Every structure is written in C-alpha cells, then in structure tokens.
Length: 68
Length: 266
Image 1: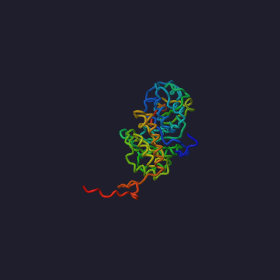
Image 2: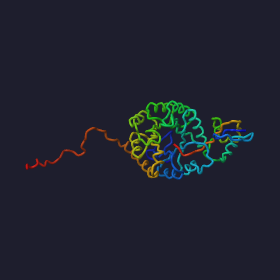
Image 3: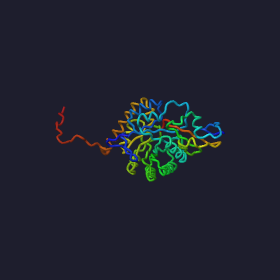
Image 4: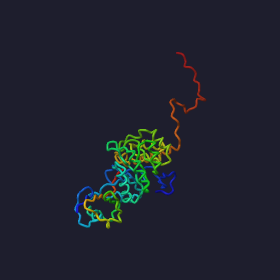
C-alpha cells in the first residue's frame, strides 16, 4: 500500500497504522514534541497504534523546530 | 514562571516575570539559541512545527524543557485560516499546550497578516478552547475585533517580520494600547534595543524579538541589551514622559540671575 508520508510516496504493508508510518521516519514512539495528522485530521498519540491507514492517505508527521 | 514577581506580565491568568518573549528562529544552532535565551531572561518562547527531519540533531523541545521556559507554538507559514487551525491543533498535541501564537500570512514578500483569515482562524480556535495570541497588523480596529472574538492578547507588528525597521506607526500602537483591555505585545520589526524601549514607552505590555537577537552580530549581547531596554521602557512608561513642545522651556530659573552691567565702551 502506498501512502504519502511527509510529502513522499512510501510503501507500507497491509494493515499499516499511523504508528507504522511514524516508525518508518525513525521517530521513537515516546518522542516528545511530535504530532501527526492524517488527511488533515489530528491523530492523538494514544491512537497511533489503533489507527489504520488507507491507501493514498496523506500523513504529516511534524515536530518542533526553531521559529517565530 | 516566577511566583513572587513585582509587576508581572499576565496573559490568560498566567504571570511572567519577564516582558521579553523570545522567538527562536534564525539562530545558527540550538546552543546559540540556548545561550541567548539565558541572556534574554525570557520565560515564554516561540517554536514552529515542521515535518520530522530524520537527519536532525538535537531537540529544541528538550533544550527548552531544560531551560524551564514555557513554549508558545506558532502557526508560521500558514496562509489560510484552514491551515492555521490544523497547525494549531497539531501544536496542541505536540506540546501539550493550548496556547498558540496565531500567524496567518497574506504573501511571502511582506509576510503581513491576512486580516480576514486571521480573524476567522482566531474565532475558530477560541471556540476550540485555545489561548490565542494573534500576530496582527498595527490596525486598532482589527485589534478590537480580535479582542471581541476572545483572543488572550494582541501582537501588533512594528514593521514587517525580520525587517528591523522598528515601529513605523507609533501612533497606531498607542491607539491599540488605548482601545484594548488585552495585553499588547509588540511583535515583529524590532531591530535594536531602542525599538523595544519605544514599544514599552508606548504602553505595550511586552515585546517579542526573534531576528533582532538571533541575527545580531553578537546575539547574547543583543539579548541582554533588549532585555534592559524592555525594563527601561516599562519604567519610563510608568514614570510618565514630559509633553513634547515646539519651543524650549528652561529648567534653570531666571530668578537670581546676576547683572554684570553693560560691556565697557572701547
């Protein structure tokens, strides 16, 4: 299954969840200051494991940078 | 947050001892940012959200956590209310804070706020339980509208972001101060210490600086200078400046002036 992860098409196995996508980016599940949106909807950290991704899902995994 | 501070800055019921907010953008490294942060004395610090970069070394979240300051996430880079709202919701999830510095920009050349989108986003975020601090123009009417929809402060610009042009319309900043009950935080345009002092003399409650410090030749020295300028401006505002007048007014009395006689004829 192909999803769009942080702007790039990435291959994920069937049954992949938000947690799998986050892991693909090398982000530790407990990493502080990370948030995820799937198709513009925020997925709370506690729901990463249980939230499946559909093919073509647009996944944005964001974190803090210096700014403002 | 300090507990026994004289003259604290209070935003949404939270008290801060420092009236200087630090924007963390523009520093060459996290270490440089941390050093300037210490010199600034700031207790409320902005951060932005961007895509995770697997090559990134160090975490600003950890650095700010170790410094014990409060984080004020922003929505920098958003051009629509819709994007700003999602970004704020992600920031709330990432930083576990409902505080948001709301930026909705009109174009990438001026980086000026887009007033209708800003107001729409502010209203939606307040309804969603956010403590909203909007980056706004120096328009007193827009500031009032932002107050009406429930923002916790207003953050008018002195001049465009990163321009270092100071406060281009001090009269508008003074009017904003006069017409709103909210804390007024001058945001954007400060180039050096005197700009920050002027903001405070005009009655602003606080000043936010990023580039003025991060892009100074010596950011630590500039952080210290602007910190003192904010304190000086606050004191001067409270002290009450003398009115401006066209002609001189002697401070030394005429009474008791001696008469040395006419010059001797030659």
